[in-house]
Length: 191
Image (cartoon, rainbow, N blue to C red; front, side, top):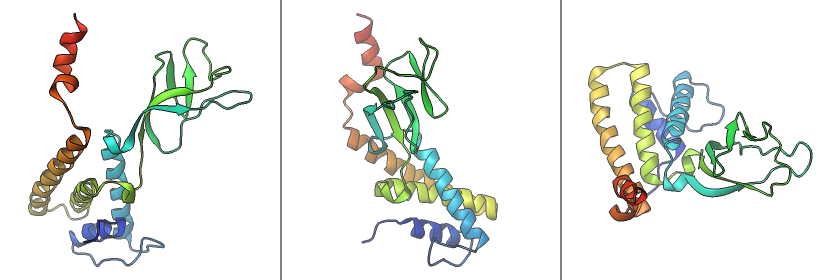
């Protein structure tokens, strides 16, 4: 069995509005196909920015430039960057020091950050690809045709795909009530 590719997802989106499939994602001249690709990329970003185990790195080192102006630049495919040092914040595509009021990090070897990465569709786990494809198809269909009947049918498909996506991510995280519950954590922090 083959996994869901970006081309397969786009063709499913086109089929949802009665359009013919395309053979390649390169040099697409069909307006609906271009719109479908755009919707798929938009939904992929929306889903990934929530942060999951497969696209999040905790304590990722960002190395400041080793020469003047010693700036620490955000990686281009990072959707969210949170420095571990609370005196540092992200401004634009650089890390700003709120104590020195500058972007200069002279003397720092690295800045550790929690980063949520933007991944290509084909790099996502299969269950997430299916969810993104169904959600994008629903959005594309709603914009292209605006049929309430089709919207209701795809809404149920999207809901089921979302549950599968969340179950898979929770299973990967191996959550533990005693260690991962906010309520339990708050009780321990107040003692």
